[in-house]
Image (cartoon, rainbow, N blue to C red; front, side, top):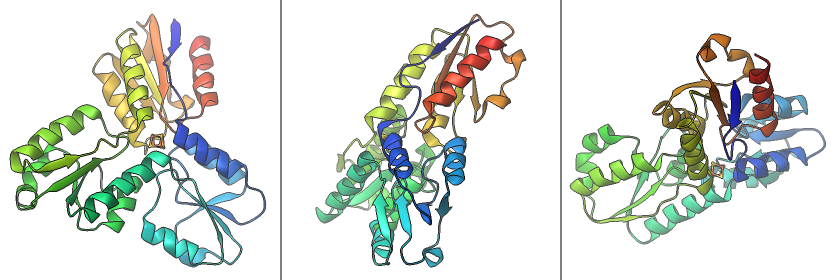
Length: 277
Ligand code: SF4
């Protein structure tokens, strides 16, 4: 069985940056604000190094260090952290910061902010907390349900979650335009997401089966799975132990990729395990 690794299979730029920032720290009482990235192996690695996740301002003591996760936080929460006697290190991915700044700019221009993305995702929560009047749209059903909200606003300023699928955004935008044609749209999908998705899709067309390894709470990992499923049998796993040899009974070629939070060593380990089957 031939095992092929997709291009761009592991950490994206923003995750690598946040991970390196955390690994550079030394001393006690170092925390990440929420999980630094959506990957169980990396969160476990940081925990073993004494870098714990924290979610409450009340649990912080003077002198603590807090690293802001790659998905960012609201300006309001950041300000609260900075008002404490602690060191705040910003691991927010620059692409997330850019989306936040565009949202701010739209609101200052008098546009009504619309965010295409998942309200429960930390990246969108961070923006929404600063702009609670924003309309958040996850799918086409939301466009129909929010008909009045969309059509009653004069001008809409639209951004999207950095890890969303470009095709979904196009479809949602087309539907929004039927409710309100006065839109200004800034595509805030990051290049890393696009590059990973197209590399995974290209490989999925050439193999019998794809394995996508990454955190099951990682949005971009789930998107990679969806993209690959259109072309071949695809499995989403968070750990190598989840693979079953029966999956590959009639496979000559198996492809591998991983989410933006998946370390390269895990991809290599998966490849070696498949070769040994
Ligand atoms: S997926 Fe894109 S936006 Fe998210 S952390 Fe990586 S580079 Fe940044």
